[in-house]
Every structure is written in C-alpha cells, then in structure tokens.
Amino acid sequence: MDKHTDLVEFESMLLGRHVHMSIRSIGDDGGLERGAYILLSRLRVEGAMSIGQLAEAFELDVSTLNRRTAALSRGGLIERIPDPEGGIARKFRLTEAGERELDQARSWNVAGLDRVLEGWSSEDVDAFADYLRRFNTDIERISGRPWPRP
Image 1 (cartoon, rainbow, N blue to C red):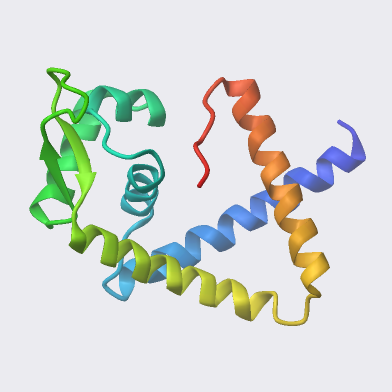
Image 2 (image 1 turned 180 degrees about the horizontal axis):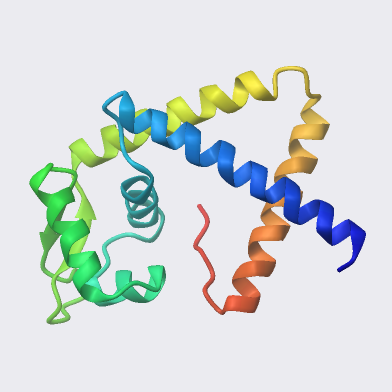
C-alpha cells in the first residue's frame, strides 16, 4: 500500500467517524437521522423519484426503501404523487415540512462546519471543497453512480 494512500485512508476513516457522530447528535436533538437526511437531500436535488429510481440511486432493495419512505411519509416529510411526466409509477417528493426539516438539519451541519473551519482562509475552504468534490466524483465515476449536484 502506498504511504500516501494509507494516510488518505486513515484520515477518511476519521472524517467518516466525525460525520457519523455529528449526524447522530442531530438525531438526538430531534432532527433528521443520517439516512433521512441523505434521501431528502437527493429528492431536493433530483426532484420527484419513484421507489425504483430511489433503489437504484441508493443501491438498496425496494423493501428497505419502502420502509424508509413509509416512515418519512408518516412523518409528513415526503408525499407520493402521480408521475409529473405521465408515467405509471407514483413518485415521492418533499413536502413543505420536509423542506423545513432538511433546511434545519443542513443549517445545523453548516453551523458546525463554520465552527471547525473558523480559522481557515476562504481560499483554503474553497480548495478543501474542490478536493472533496474531486474525491467524491471519482468514486462516483468508478462506481457508475453519479450523485446530482445543485
């Protein structure tokens, strides 16, 4: 293993741990748990999606997504609608409550990042964001699963 790659592996493991613990604390405060945050974020960026499209996007089986979407629907965060393009499959979209919850969770995340990056120059923050984007898009290219970006 290349020493440089070894360093990236270790630091990415720690980043994943920090993110996991931060998101868990959002849930402890009554906010969104990680899976809901990611699913709602995908619907916001991509628009209405069917259960099949969600299963493909998340590489999860339909039964798992049926449980997840049922919980989000019961919570009033998403709703099923007829396909806006006239297809037969119904689609899920964010509700106004879902938009508010997602905005609140995202604001909490951004505020936390603001605290972490407080001493960084704007150039350093931009460079870090560029490297993260490059890292993520290379993973997406290799996996064949691009993530839509706003």
